[in-house]
Picture: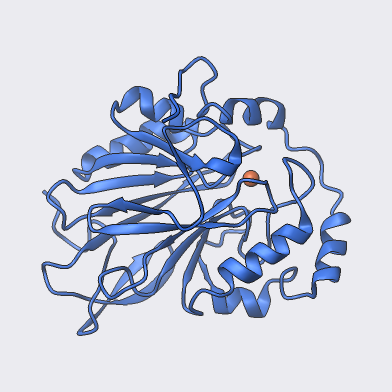
Length: 282
Ligand SMILES: [Fe+2]
């Protein structure tokens, strides 16, 4: 039975008190709630070969402790499922922010190892999944939910998942930006239907319009950062603080090499990461 703040990261909500908790190297304060309010269990997990972050979220105050994983990686599925089990959670969704080019998603493997879990991706991604989401959709896990925001530009089907608005939802809000917005950077826009113009508009209209204290969690980090905020990126993002024309010019002149795994990862990720697994579309 897990019931101690020293064992898991909880985020609670109510304007009355404030507690602090450690998130990797970051100390963040959140309001606390009465015992009946939803309680978010949150873990940021890392896959070192592709520098990918996977996020585990659960409603820990719900009797079933329903949980979801955002952007799981095939190589760390066993670690993630072990953690889910150790924490006594019921995994219900394995979600992707987009079709990744640098690693194979863990959603297909998870479906095989944890029957009943549904894969989730945007309808615009053109990939297979059990649940297709569109802008404005809400994904409930217990009494908590994520909103879907379309943030194309890195790929055509990129979405950002944002924790709900309201006093019974995490304060401050949290946004899982995939590769649309990275800490002091952004995803490349030169393949998979990418568009620098679209990415600029996505970030400015869908992410920078969130409350300034919204915590931003990207799909990757290559410099050791774990989290940022809307206010921080609006001030210090070296690309997205520029005007649109300058941004487009920066993105068009990155001259990045093709991702090593793109030829394997993209076809696999279009079918939940396993080309031989039937990923039934609902
Ligand atoms: Fe990506």
